[in-house]
Structures are given as C-alpha cells and as structure tokens.
Image 1: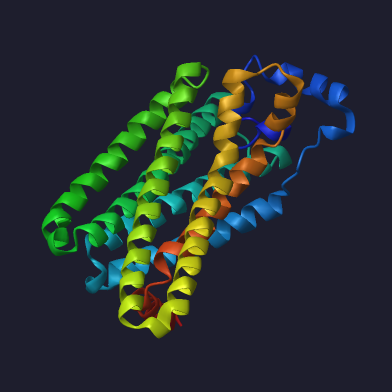
Image 2: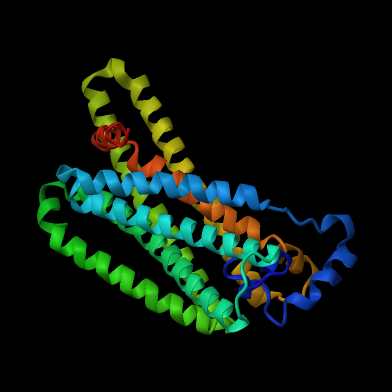
Length: 317
C-alpha cells in the first residue's frame, strides 16, 4: 500500500508510474508558486467517507425494507447506493490502514500490505465503474418511462433489470481486475477515459431529450390555458437549471479523476501535468462527494422512500 505523500491513497499506483513520479519535484521548481497541492486532511477524508457511508446504507436499507420499492427503477437506485457505499467504505478502510501503519499501531509484512492494497484497489475500481454504469442505467430507465410510457412495464421488467444489474457487477469486477493488473498500459487508461466520456454523452443526450419532451408537453398545456404561459417559461428554466446541476455535478466530481488518467497518457513528464498529479487525493475526495450527493438527487426525492426512511430511523431508536 503506498504510504508516501500524495501516493498513499487508494489507486496510488496511478500516481506513481515510473514516467510521472520523478518529475514532481521538477514541476515544483519550474512552475514556482503556481504549482500548488491541495491537501486533504485525513480527518476530512474520513468524515466525507462516513457521511457517504451512512447515507447510502440508509438508502439500501429503506429500499430493502419496503416491498413497494422493489421495482426496476429502485433496484438501479439501490445498486447505485451500494456502489457509492463501497467507494466510500474502501477509501475509508485504505486511509485507516495507512494511518495505523504510519503510527506503528499496525505491523504487517510488505507482501501482506501489498495484497491488501490490491484487494482494496479492485473493490474501489469495480465500485467506481459500477457507479458510472448505474448512473447510465437510471438515465436509460427514465428515458424509457417517458418516451415509451405505455410499454414501459413490458420493456423494463424486474428479471431484465436483475440480469442487467448482474452483468454490470460482473463486468465491473473483471474490468477493474484487468485495470489494476495493467494500470501502467496507456491503452487501459484510455479505455477508462473513453468509458467515462461515453457515460457523460449518454446521460447528456438522454436528459436533454427528456427535458425537450417535457417542455413540449408543458407548452401544449399552456396553449390550452393561455394564462399559464409564464408558468411554462418558468418550467423550462427550472428544468434547464435542474439538468445543468445534474450533469454539472457529475462532470465536476468525476471529470478531474479521468483528466488525471488522460494526462498520465498524454504528458507524464510535463511540469504542469505533474502539478496536477499531486492533487490526486483531491480527485478521490470529489468522487466521495459525488457519493454523498447521489442519494440527494436520485433517492431522497422520492416521497415513499423518505417515508420508509423515517420508519427505519424511528424503529432504530
């Protein structure tokens, strides 16, 4: 498990490639004060992970408890929460183990530490990939529910949803295992970047099309009730703002990490790129922030889920 500076966190191997690491010092000298590293305190990192962990555990518990939520849509939301839970939990575990090793409270052989690091890396990589996949699956599910409303229940059945979920988890584990084994190959990194861009484009196209359809529907209603024209305009602005926030948060939280991967391939020795490499922990923290925001966007807006969540919390007391 990496234990030096910005390389000590999960997936630190990405930040310690032979072509990139030796130039971190050079970057600091050549760019001077402009080469800044945003330090993420361990306490803050663990706190973000804990908040995400609690949130997503509540989502999974509420969906599992309420049979009315055992629909394909909520299955995808539950799996998204489970993926985010694993992202946060594995990062917290890695951080805790690293702190214990540095403090001397935990003693282990180098081979054992390396094996543990590999296992955590696979868990985190697979949960990251599955999280992206389930975000895409939720977008597809909502698209079908709007554009094929009458056929939705015959298209998106529970058995089909379960098969899709199983395929996503299996593919995520296999791909992450290959990724960890061949992280120093440019082709592997580029495949991950292309996958992220594909998910971004997919979500953007589907949600923009859904917004356009919703605006057309609102416009049709406004024509029947001319006095509601201002309300239609307000609906369009609200929908555009919601779409901007949804895609903006996705890009802001995930984009820096995949920019990091892209720069490893394109300019591993350039001083400016090396400065960006030093903020690797910040990029991981942003992904955990996304795991905190996902339940707010996809789960807690459901009135029935909120009601079930209240029951769970009251029963726990």
